[in-house]
Structure formats: C-alpha cells, structure tokens
Length: 408
Image 1 (cartoon, rainbow, N blue to C red):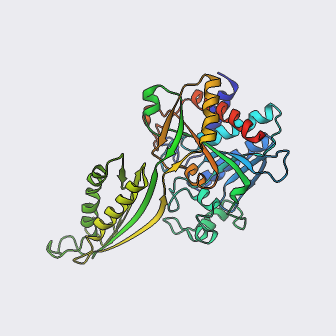
Image 2 (tube, rainbow, N blue to C red):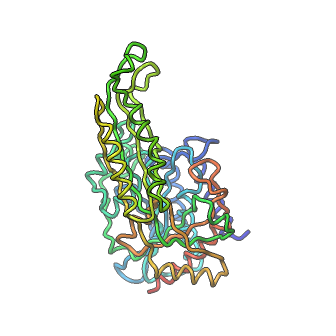
Image 3 (cartoon, helix red, strand yellow):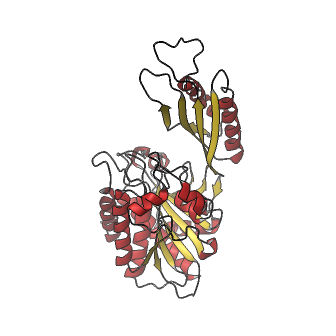
C-alpha cells in the first residue's frame, strides 16, 4: 500500500471518530461539537502541509498555498464535511481528504504554483440541520445572503449565529466570495450508487449533475379527540398528507426520463397517539436530468397538494431550494481524462443523480467532478464504504490536473 493510500485511511478513520452516534454511523451536524472536532483536525492537517488557514462567516474552511502571481484566482479542491444523521464516513469527507492529499503532494514535491492552490472544507451541504442544503457553497456565491443565513434556525429554534458562536466561530466574517477570485473548482465524491462497481470501473468523470428542487408542504387541519370525534367531518391533516404523498411515485413514473420524487421528512403535530393531527409538515425532493422534467413535477406536485385545500384543510407550499441541471467544464474534463490515460486508470463518463456543492459553483466557476465506486451502491448509512485505492486514484488525477491549472 502506497503512502497516499495509507494517509487516506488515516484521515478517514480520524474524521469518522467525530460522530454523535458512535457505532451507529456518522452523525456530524453543522456547528456541533463533532463539527468542531473535525474542523480542528482539518485545520491542523492544513497547517501541517504548509497552508495558510482561514474560515469565512459561514464556517467554511480554507487552506491556501500561495502562488507566484499576485492577486491571482485560486484553484479550489474540496468537498463538505457535515453528514446526515447516522450516515457514513465517506460522503463528503473523502473529497476533503483528497484535497488535503493533493496539497500534501504539492508540499512534499516542493511545488510552488503560479496560481494559488486552495483546499476547501464546506459546511452544511446535506441540509441536515438548517434548511435547503448546499449552504456553504450557496452562501459563498451570494445565493444565500448574509441576512438570510443569519435568520436560519434548526428544528430546536437555534439560529446559525447562536450555533456558530457556541463552537467559537467568528460570525462577523464575510460570507460572500467573489467568483473572480476562484480559477476552478474540483470535487471528488463517492458515487452513492451502483454503476461504477457494477461496471468494475474505478473512476467516473462527471459530465452533468441532475436538477433538483425541494418543497416544504404544510397541511393544516383541526385537532380533536381520537375517540369522540366522528369520522364524518374530520379535518385530519395526516390523512390529507398521506393521500398526497402516496401519489408521488406514480407521478414520477409518468414523468419518465429518470425523474424521481422522495418525501424524506414528515413531522406530525401534536403527535399524540389519541389526537387527530392538526398539522403535518413534509418535504418533497424532486430530481431529473432535464430542467423541463423538474419544472413539470413541481407544477404537478403543487397542483396535487393544493387540490386538498378544502373541507377544513389548508395547504401552504414553500420552495427553499431550486437548482437547474448543471454541465461540468469540458476543458477540465479533458485534463482529467488525459490524466486517466497517462496513469492507465480506466474511467467512464457518468451523470450525478445527487446534488453537490459543485453544482452551485458551476454557474460561476470552471468546475469538474470525479466519482469513485461505492460498495453495494450504499450511502447515507453506516455501511457506506469506498476503497482507499480508488480514493488514491482521485488524488493522483486531481494532482495532475491541479499542476496544469495552477501553471497557466
């Protein structure tokens, strides 16, 4: 096993220990104690590899290797380091580890780039604590204003500012970063699906990321005693919500083109076993490779939900996130494919069915992604696992691409 692979396993194991659910997967919510532990580890490695470390007003972490060109834009490499509840150790952190190892190779080989190289570790990509997801990248690009960011609260009513201050982060720092200060963005991610493993191909060069949107739907009815309220005339919010949600699979199938719809979060109020629910809030995640399919589903879901606004039932719909399908930069894709050929690493082109920070940056910055296989296609669960040898391939490919991108 080579040094890069050994280092990768060391980093993954170390970061995997920073979880609120030991033995039950990685639970590392943004601005939590576990966030601080992982944050300190990442910053220490950045410093060890000779990078200048800083954070922004969102809590994103940057480690910069200065270039010889003054005030030149940086080549950014990285991913996110938060997790879903009871997730795995690879979704996000593996991409941060790749970036750290690329920086270590620059340092080890005493390379001084013309354009700066920056490692970035992004917060709240998953949206597991605060609404919408992709918060770190959206905030950087101005899609989430500093004011809106500071007004976000988690399910316990704790604001982003309160949570940041609790772990000692500086909330007065800027959140926005001018895209002109970034030359390119590279992100490695586990596939989170079965295609690469089934094909026995170690690298997927991402050509495009599907479009996605999220709706929050609130169904309001009337609470009542479960035993004394007649069935006729009830305004049961959960029955209405269940009827709506049950129609989503067929709606996606009718849309075709690989479209998918998921309700992953459902909260029932007052949540008593013998009380008729008077309010239900649930999420609707919709994805497709073409924007027209995403927009079609949005309209159909909204129309379906609003059709239940009658007989004492009220429906309210919010759309906290909408991302168009994104195409990756062909020039950088070419560099990555050339590196695959030079290193004799088999690869294939692939589309991403999941959203990533790369899809945010791609509107403003030349962006590229690599996928590596996920064992059994599993992700967002404790069983999530990827081979460190595959991760090492991504390190070598990004190292070669970064050398060229920072040279000219």
